[in-house]
Length: 301
View 1 (cartoon, rainbow, N blue to C red):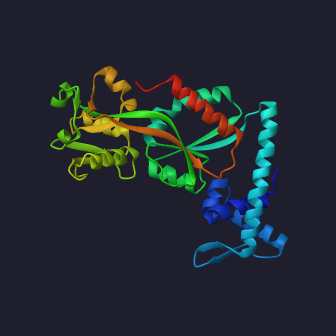
View 2: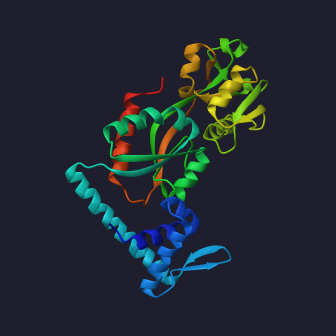
View 3: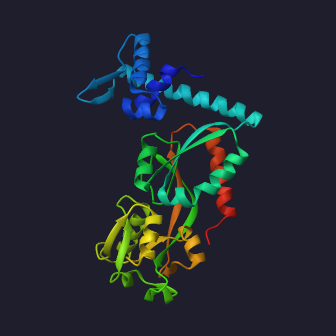
């Protein structure tokens, strides 16, 4: 309903990038440029300075941005008010999730959500936690789900579930007979870890620092990009690892892997993260409420 030229301008102004705005709006870059020029023609002034491959707002652009923000906030309040009266939940949401969450937590949750709200179109982008936070910061996704603490104060963070990390070993490994193991007892063994930027790796490094251990003391023999590849490598006897217990349901049932608790226990929060000032779409609110309820009813065991 809102002026398309203003929507395109607002997206470019938030990201200060025509390329990123085009990706977010699912438009070609020439189409984005055309819409901005149409608005500049309307006001008979430049709204952006484009010099040395940088995009900055002119004074007129800054004024337009301030008013556009108020316009879209009022528009969203109006839309949400009407939808709350009619009970309508619809629209398109773009979610982002770290690999562990996307593979093991979200499928069942999103299936149940779309069964209930069939008019909501969900898009999912998968990256490591660092990448998902960056997508939220750059307004490339509406909502992220990550497994690391978020330090950006401009983002809203809501914990949805506590996850337990455990030591993963082959069935015949000597540590497999233990009920628990200390972090420093893992140092002698070949260790398979996630790539840098992964939430799992970041939590492990932070835990070692808290315990007074050198983060470089682990005998890393492989770096792999997903829990599935790590589980396969551990099953093949290439080393041990630390993974979310939530990723091991099938392997523990088949007894192809063993999980050993850490002493002290190592836990982390799975959290929703979004822009603090981002307009609160009714569909996002419903998804958040649904997810919190789902996590309470389906705790990790």
